[in-house]
Image (cartoon, rainbow, N blue to C red; front, side, top):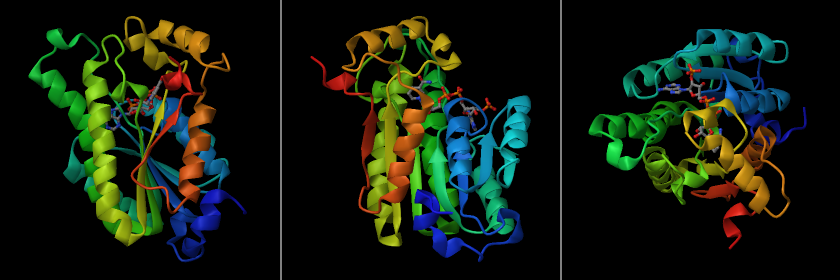
Length: 264
Ligand SMILES: NC(=O)c1ccc[n+]([C@@H]2O[C@H](COP(=O)([O-])OP(=O)(O)OC[C@H]3O[C@@H](n4cnc5c(N)ncnc54)[C@H](OP(=O)(O)O)[C@@H]3O)[C@@H](O)[C@H]2O)c1
C-alpha cells in the first residue's frame, strides 16, 4: 500500500491493536456527511482505519460506516466536540481499541448565520465553542495518543479572512481556529506533530442553504475565479493528502480557492 499516509506513517503498521488491522488510524470530527465524509472516503482509499465523530444525525453516521466498512475498519462515535471531557474519553477508547492515531481532522462545524447586530452572546459562544474550541478539545484529547509523525488538520474557510453575508460569527470562529492552528503548531512541533488548516472557498453543498444568500456564493465564485469552475470536495481532500505527506509545512492555512481571493 504505497500511499501518502501509509508511506509516512508506516511505523504504525503491524504494531497496533487488532481493530485497526495494522493500519494507520485517522479520526475525523464531522466525518459522517458532507466534506467530512469525502475526507473519510479519501483516507479510506489511502488505507486508514477510520474513527468518525458526529453529533446528532445517526442515520448519516450509520450509512457512512456501512459504506466505508466495505474498504477499511470504521467505527462511528457520537461525541459533541464542545464537551472536551467526553471527547477525551472517546479518543481514549479509540486509542485503546485501535492504537496510536496518525491523523486527526477537525472538520465539524456549526454556527448561527445572521447579521452580527442580531446575534447574542449565546450564539457567539456556541459558534466559537464548536468551530474553534472543538479544535483545542480535539488536540488535548488526541496528542497524548498520537503516533509520530502525527498530523492535526482543521477545516477553515475563506470567511476567516473576508466577509460573507450572515457569516460574522462563523467567520470569527474560523479566524480563531486559524490562530489556534498556529499556536498548536508551535506547541507540538517538537513532538513530531504538525498542525495546519485548509481554507476552501464555497463548495456546492446543502450547508450553503443555511445562509440566505449562500447559493449565490458559488455562482459568484465561478464567475470570478480564473478557471471559472466550482470547487469540489475533491479539492479539499487532495490538499489534505498533501499536508499529511509534509513534515515541514506547519502552522499554515492552505487556501483552496483556485486563486479567487487574489483576484482584484
Ligand atoms: N460547504 C462549504 O461550502 C464549505 C466551504 C468552506 C469550508 N467549509 C468547512 O468544511 C467543513 C465541513 O462542512 P460541511 O458543509 O460538509 O458541513 P456539514 O455538512 O454541515 O457537516 C457538519 C458535520 O459536523 C458535525 N458536527 C456539527 N456540530 C458538531 C459537534 N458539536 N460535535 C461533533 N460533530 C459536530 C455534524 O454531525 P451531525 O451529522 O451529527 O450533525 C456533521 O457531521 C466545515 O468545517 C465547514 O466550515 C465548508
